[in-house]
Length: 433
Image 1: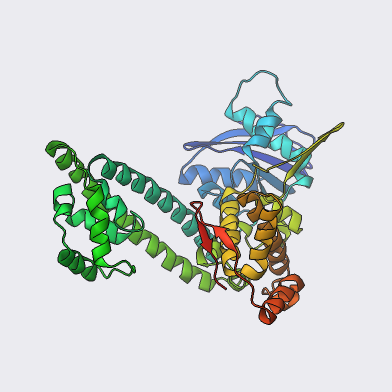
Image 2: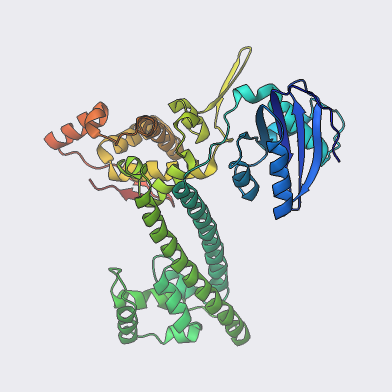
């Protein structure tokens, strides 16, 4: 219900929107903190139209705060002539403590807190800007691909547990369980007795039919099965085999979906003008480029300095100093999707760029740094360069990177042994130049 306190000359209006699945609470206050409107709107076509009309009605500059940065409501608000701010739920939770000590909560109160906090703090915050259709599509695809990858990993774990319960020999056959050839083997030979009857000739026929690209001969594959031909009771075998074949089919479908996502990402990257900046760096493939592009966006003012981007991606440590105590800690509050991808970028760069990134890694490790700490140091160097190229809209040029240029020149004059880098499972992999 509206509670008007009308003023004839409103110059600034601050809106707080407490969004929900079925209803959205809107609070409008003026520059003096007086409530202009407090009303609830349904999450329907008519409700969103009424909410947008309420935001268009006030004269002067309208600024709105909401606790999310994406979704139907946010995209609709970005079409209005207002300044929209995405507020962290942690910030709004702390802000509520300024207005009341009791831990009570209501949609109307939360909307007011967002609006009044925006009134006091908006000069320190940066509003959201609408992205191009190409970037919005890329963001949607890369985020949904991550969900498919999570489902794929969870399903693989379930299949692995099923195989361990009745037919562990398959787990020792090929390099990974989620490969299509492993899944097809489960589909064709789901029971331990069937796997035991796979001879050298039958294995040759199977891997030929499946276009096996591994370098392990059929005879070795057969020998891998023999020591692990454990089996449960007949009833357990039949029941687990029924489950295993269905899990394998689901995993094959997810594998196909991931390949389709990767093809779509390639297509979308080709349409975006900033793609060439990201792909010009060593160690950045299509998925990494898409994730970084989606996270950094197109607004160069969003990250005014390299330090801002380092903080966003969790590469800048947090310093806590009080009196004689000073601690430098890992930054947990960060864009975890970007942090994970930058960590992967650094890992790949150490392998693909061994004579600069690899040397930095070896030096850090010899100085006592842990594996991930060494990778973060390398990642911070690359992210500073990425920010500069992104900010200036230029490609990465090794000739403008003196430390790496000198390292590559030295390597051309004297061949050095490539560094050994632990893989994701902790095993040592030798990098190739």
